[in-house]
Each structure stands twice: as structure tokens, then as C-alpha cells.
Length: 117
Image: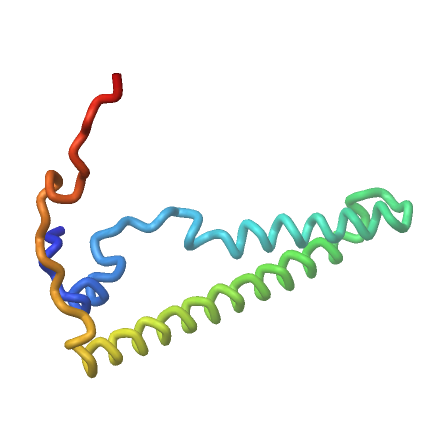
């Protein structure tokens, strides 16, 4: 990626070409299962019953927590998409606030090295 891209071009690139981790898609289901079964186990332990008794508690917990985590994930994605849209719109309205950065060589950025003896 070239460093001569304008701010709007950088924002439009987004996550294109970037491979998303597998857990990004499946984390609501994994956490929902973990917390749902864990809640059922905790309730049974607290009431001094066999841990896997009343399997409907575990199933309801898994469905409930998975739905909750999926809802939170969708709301987060909506929020981030709206935030990107607002930023993109602001950059389009005020391009003078976002000049294209000039290219610098690495030697211009680093300070000269002086050995201490």
C-alpha cells in the first residue's frame, strides 16, 4: 500500500483484502454455548442437584446467551459502520483538513547516530 493515498482513499480501503480471523464470525456461538452450559451447571451446583440434570436449563441458556451475543455483535457492527460513514462524509466535506502526506525517506525520519564511547 502506497503512503501517497489521500484520507478518503485510506478510509475506503477498510478491510478489503484483509483476511478476517475465524473467531470473528463464530464468537457469539462459542461464548453463548460456554455461558449457557456454564449457567446451567452453576444453577445445578448451587441447588445441590446433579450437574447435568434439567437439560432444558442448559439448552435455554445456550439459546438465550447465543441470541444475546449475536444481538450485541450486530449492534456493534452497525455502530462501527455508522461511525465510518460519518467519518467518510466529514472527509468528503472538508478535504482541506486532510492533505496528502508527503513521502519521507527513512534517513530523513531517523536522527543521526552518534556512538557513545
